[in-house]
Image (cartoon, rainbow, N blue to C red):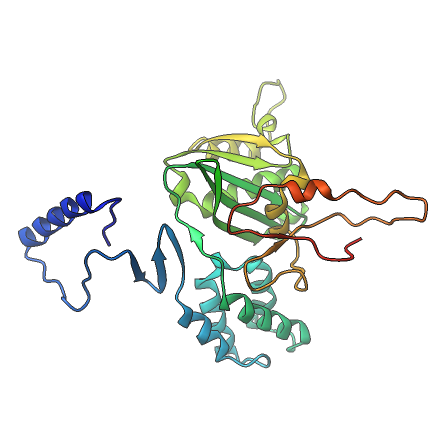
Length: 312
């Protein structure tokens, strides 16, 4: 696949490609070759105008599965399709862990929670949000961690616009779930970088997180021998060129959402992402919370913040 920013540079690239093919005597299929297209289908992904999304036929294949009582073979096939398009599914790790448990040696019986997850995955897959292919803008990696899960989102800021490039989430190992919160936050950054390594390894990027201890904890200036785990993490992070920015928790909304168990009644299949709030009791004499500040938050064009009614 050859890509160029304009027709002139594309013609030069095509000539170079032709020379290489001619030099080595490589045979090309005319039926499988297309030239000068603004939109292409590649590996079941539709690529157009700097964005890409899965081919609709993948979502149609999911609809062919029943809503409940999968056989082991059906679970494997269903998860195979879901994992291929998981970059477009918020909370993919949460949903997958619910269904993949059915593949264990002694699996639980099929229950209503499995049916709900299957139905939700089918709905989300029908109209996944398109992802922007990072170009020359400033890359921003937002991360967050909860007790069990971690979440990350990659954003490109260009010409004062923020574009949504991808999200990732996962579950901490059983041993890691006992780590201190700071360690989990650091691991969330590591997992996020690993997920988007292709875009980040040769670029300077910004890490945004709601924990201010991350940059300090990896600076070993005291006389106490550092923790071996921190030494290994510090050595690993040294491969990348990034700056850490601390953001308040209420401004780290999407990464926070991805690190929490999914609220299926708040997530819609159209790529709209809800605001997540901390719940608290409101007594008769308590002042009503002011939510106006949340309406002023900046979101990438593909993300629409929705405020559920009667939230508090």
